[in-house]
Image (tube, rainbow, N blue to C red; front, side, top):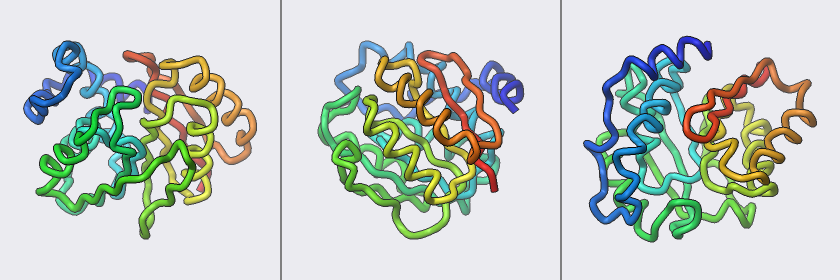
Length: 200
C-alpha cells in the first residue's frame, strides 16, 4: 500500500497550482508545495475513498488534490471544517476559495474550531479522514479520537513531524489505540504523512 502510494506520488504530474488562490499570503512557498500536494493526490488515488471528512480545509488545496486523485470523483462526498484563521499556514477567507474550487463536487465546508474541541462531523459515513489543522497535542488527539469513534477506515494525519507536540500526540495515540489499528505507516514527504488503517 505505502509502496503503491509512493509510486503514484513520484509519477504524477498533477499540479495544485491550477487551483491556486492569488490572495494566499504563502505565495513564497507556492512552487515548493507542488510535491506536497501530489502526495495528497497519490493517497486518494490508492485509497479510493468514497466519502472524505477533513479537519483543516484552509484554501482547499488538499481537498482538490483528493478529489482529482480519486479515479471516479463524480459521486465522492466531501465534508470539511476550518477555523478560518491564520493559524498553521491558513489565512482568513481561505475557505471562500475552497468553496469556489470545490463547487463542482458534492462538497460542504463549515466554520468551527477543532482546537476548542467543539467540532462534530456532519451526518453520514466517511471512509477517510484527513487531519490537517491543529498541530498541538490536544487537538491532534481529539481529531484522531473523533475518527476512531466514527469508525472511519483511513485516518491520514498531515505533517506528523511539523511540531514536537504533534509528533508526540501521534505516537501516544498509536500506543493507546493499538488494538483498534490494523496497520499504520509514515511516508516522510515534506513533514510526514501518517496513514492509519483502523479495524473494521
